Image (cartoon, rainbow, N blue to C red; front, side, top):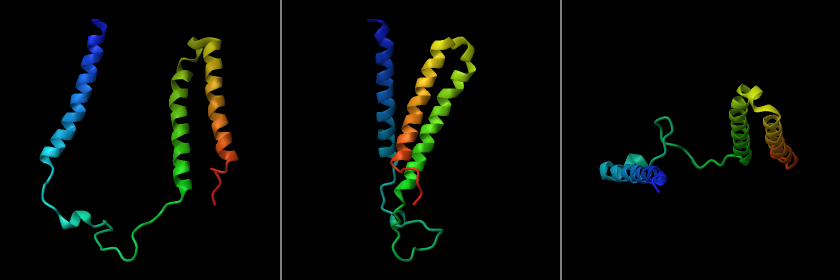
Length: 117
């Protein structure tokens, strides 16, 4: 049972930090309404016309693809550093990992997610 005391303390401290941050922000936030807080900021000038702009869905698709392959690089670097010590099993596991990522890229390409329209 003593092994779980550290885990319980970690969970309790995490909950207290989260709840404490929310409580402190609630206690110190400004209470008065400011009319300028509700206005959109556009270089200090009031906007003209409709201010709602919808972005193309493809911008977000490209951003997600970037994040996916950025995370792939994060996992490839430690593998490359310890390549000699991992042996054949590490090589096979990394090929499986890369295959899954290439499969996801192929699927995104097939569905037209990477085409700019």
